Length: 85
Image 1 (cartoon, rainbow, N blue to C red):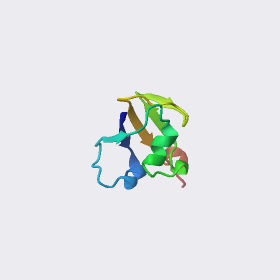
Image 2 (cartoon, helix red, strand yellow):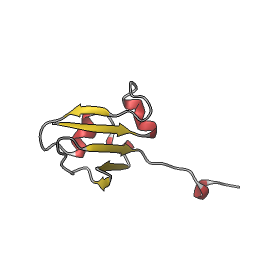
Image 3 (cartoon, helix red, strand yellow):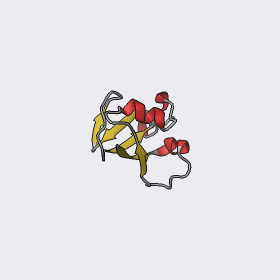
Image 4 (cartoon, helix red, strand yellow):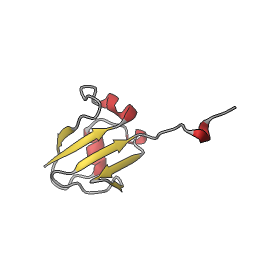
């Protein structure tokens, strides 16, 4: 099966050929999980904070289906709460 992945922020370094906003088509065996996709992409699981499939947040054990659109995000810091004066 084939899924379509977008990597965000610092995770793009694991697929340096991708341009900003570009989708990567990834071939996986039927019933592969999000965790298997992350491993296939060579991304350390500890660097992934949030995964969306079809615009819904899913866990690592979520089973992917052919044609799924997947967004993978690292932890993000910043904003007002992190500012120090």
